[in-house]
Image 1 (spheres, rainbow, N blue to C red):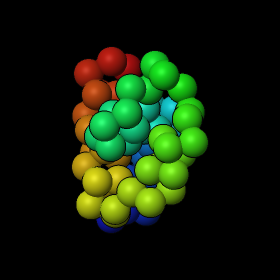
Image 2: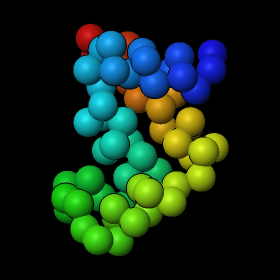
Image 3: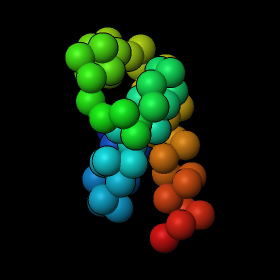
Length: 66
Protein backbone atom coordinates (compact mmCIF):
# COMPACT_ATOMS: atom_id res chain seq x y z
CA UNK A 1 0.00 0.00 0.00
CA UNK A 2 1.40 3.39 -0.94
CA UNK A 3 1.57 6.34 1.44
CA UNK A 4 -1.15 8.06 -0.61
CA UNK A 5 -3.43 5.02 -0.30
CA UNK A 6 -2.84 4.87 3.45
CA UNK A 7 -3.65 8.56 3.78
CA UNK A 8 -6.81 8.18 1.72
CA UNK A 9 -8.01 5.29 3.87
CA UNK A 10 -7.43 7.35 7.00
CA UNK A 11 -9.41 10.25 5.52
CA UNK A 12 -12.20 7.98 4.22
CA UNK A 13 -12.64 6.49 7.68
CA UNK A 14 -12.46 9.81 9.51
CA UNK A 15 -9.37 8.80 11.47
CA UNK A 16 -7.35 11.98 10.99
CA UNK A 17 -7.45 12.96 14.67
CA UNK A 18 -6.61 9.41 15.72
CA UNK A 19 -3.61 9.49 13.38
CA UNK A 20 -2.33 12.75 14.90
CA UNK A 21 -2.70 11.31 18.42
CA UNK A 22 -0.88 8.13 17.36
CA UNK A 23 1.90 10.13 15.72
CA UNK A 24 2.28 12.35 18.80
CA UNK A 25 2.56 9.26 21.01
CA UNK A 26 5.12 7.77 18.61
CA UNK A 27 7.20 10.90 19.02
CA UNK A 28 7.12 10.66 22.82
CA UNK A 29 4.35 13.18 23.53
CA UNK A 30 1.18 12.53 25.51
CA UNK A 31 -1.76 13.48 23.27
CA UNK A 32 -3.77 14.25 26.42
CA UNK A 33 -1.42 17.20 27.03
CA UNK A 34 -2.71 18.89 23.87
CA UNK A 35 -0.70 20.69 21.25
CA UNK A 36 2.40 22.24 22.75
CA UNK A 37 4.95 24.19 20.74
CA UNK A 38 7.40 21.30 21.06
CA UNK A 39 4.76 18.78 20.04
CA UNK A 40 3.77 20.72 16.95
CA UNK A 41 7.41 21.11 15.96
CA UNK A 42 7.93 17.37 16.39
CA UNK A 43 4.88 16.64 14.23
CA UNK A 44 6.15 18.96 11.52
CA UNK A 45 9.59 17.32 11.53
CA UNK A 46 8.59 13.69 12.00
CA UNK A 47 10.46 11.34 9.66
CA UNK A 48 8.36 9.62 7.00
CA UNK A 49 9.11 6.18 8.45
CA UNK A 50 7.59 7.18 11.80
CA UNK A 51 4.63 8.84 10.06
CA UNK A 52 3.98 5.68 8.05
CA UNK A 53 4.16 3.40 11.11
CA UNK A 54 1.75 5.67 12.99
CA UNK A 55 -0.61 5.69 10.01
CA UNK A 56 -0.59 1.91 9.72
CA UNK A 57 -1.20 1.56 13.48
CA UNK A 58 -4.07 4.02 13.19
CA UNK A 59 -5.67 1.93 10.45
CA UNK A 60 -5.17 -1.27 12.44
CA UNK A 61 -6.69 0.26 15.58
CA UNK A 62 -9.55 1.66 13.50
CA UNK A 63 -10.34 -1.87 12.30
CA UNK A 64 -10.49 -3.06 15.90
CA UNK A 65 -12.95 -0.27 16.81
CA UNK A 66 -15.24 0.45 13.84
